[in-house]
Length: 313
Image (cartoon, rainbow, N blue to C red; front, side, top):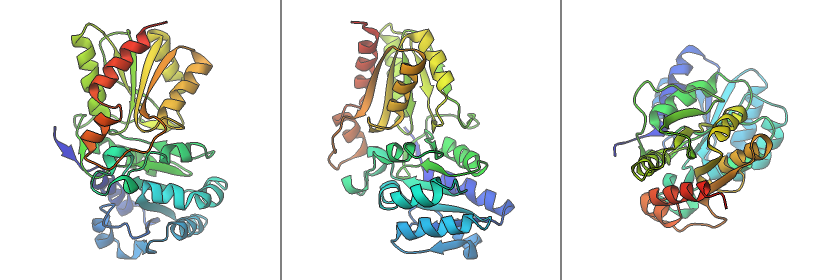
């Protein structure tokens, strides 16, 4: 399968936006190269603020700039941003509702294959999802990351864009629409079971849907590219048709997309939902594909979870 960089795609969208809006500025805690923001820096050298390895300072500076009408974007590794600067995001950006955008790199096991377990982050969505007013975008590939970055820049208030390592599988054709705040039906064979997938594991969810179809199970695959605000009504509509589901994410099962799906199910249409993600464990370092297989996110795991969800006992 071909791969393409979500980092480069998102930064291209931001650079294009910056050509039209001179209020856009990037704050970097030693992350310009990692975020593939070098082109932005070359084109707008006076609109990049490099603070060194100091994520808390980066967020505080972004908050200050936002109060003046600037449109700051903080780029860093997902965990360093959401954990080291967690209080600053909560108190100085989320609480006052400032127009600051956050971009997290190396989301999930797939995201950190080059640096290992210390640079794989599977708590970031859960952390930020608990903060009132913070929007969370989880595109599935580079093409969608480009569209998600454009959508994020059009939003008011704090938002978080989750990106990967820069080698994400290409799954959707050019021109695939992206609608912030809405789920999207990727493919529908029938209503035996729903598969909700979020982020760069989408290629496996697609393969699982096809495998289920080959085994006589006609399901529906849904792309959850906005985790917050979740399209709860859209989720409920799918669940009413299928009455069972699997929620698949490269994230800890606590607090992420699968938790959001279960909350929507409890409120709108109680039914059996199987969750696939990291089951309250820290994985080892390793190659991305091998890690996903080892920790319950193989295609066969999705297929088996779908069949289990269909079993009503």
